[in-house]
Length: 104
Image 1 (cartoon, rainbow, N blue to C red):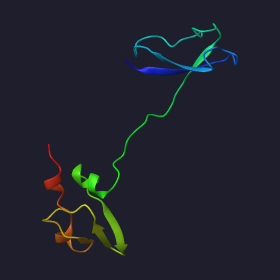
Image 2 (image 1 turned 60 degrees about the horizontal axis):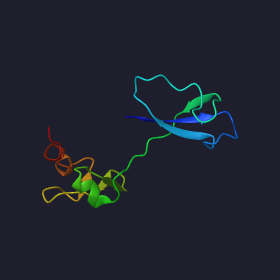
Image 3 (image 1 turned 90 degrees about the vertical axis):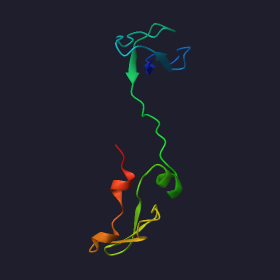
Image 4 (image 1 turned 30 degrees about the vertical axis):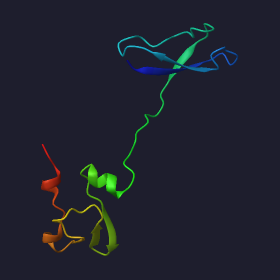
């Protein structure tokens, strides 16, 4: 079940002003604080997301990372054995092998 964050309008609320409630997505939003009875409003907080750290983890997850080295030249830092180290924009044979990495 989702966890929703609420902010109480009563600054001296025993809940400390903000509190979390586990509710169904179909439940109505709370109108009053369960601790003091004052009005509350739902607060939207950002969702925590973990992003891969490091080129090795990107490679393990199947991503391709190109780092610009010169005009039209990129280094494929997540290359596999059959891929070129440098991708030249005007040489299609140096492109990363995306079809091999992408699976259905």
